Image (cartoon, rainbow, N blue to C red):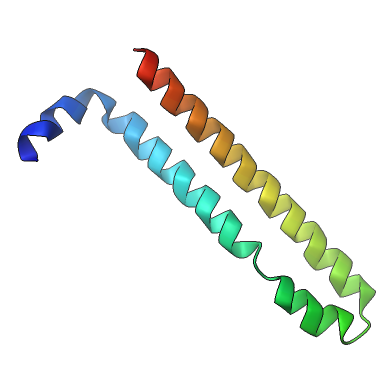
Length: 82
């Protein structure tokens, strides 16, 4: 395994960036799982303002996760063409 790591040296920065983007995507996906919080604090309490605020935040986080995924895939494809 250690012998194979020398072949990854030219791609070190690219691998780190793709890893950070993947962590960002996974974090966004996990954060969007707070729909139970909307049900408990928004729907059950008839608090439409909370539903809109939390839903809007979820949309922003989902867009951020999608951007991380698209950039990560693009960088991965670019690295394969080299």
